Length: 156
Image (cartoon, rainbow, N blue to C red; front, side, top):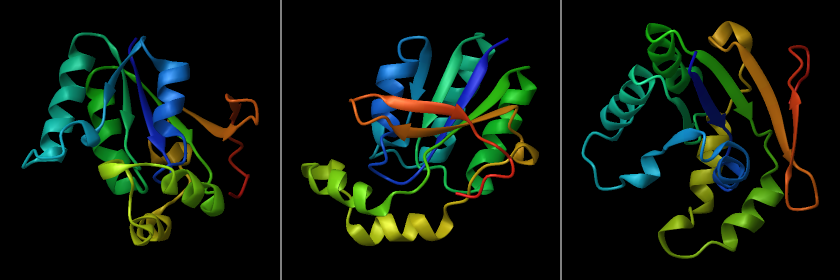
């Protein structure tokens, strides 16, 4: 059974680094950042997700994915292909995010207002949102990540 991993968190929260360290190369990487000039980025993302799942491959969607509006179509696609839906929740750490973002260069750096706009929409995922499993992901202080099952009663 393939797995669809949905990474959820602010810009510069460590999602792409987590993907590279923990999920690659087993998972196909899908991110709207990889096609910034595409006219219909959402449509293209969904097509790539659907294609990979149809091939029985694991997929990681590496965007901010701040709310159910972003998760729902992904979870529905996973269900159509009999895939498990796993959420990786990066609890907001605004000071750390702003520092990491400031260290970025070029187009990878996001205006601070963009981070705050995402923060306003950011919601911790829950199983009723269509997830089979949810993990909380935090930096471990040694260049890696601390990944733990996210308790439903936990408030982030």
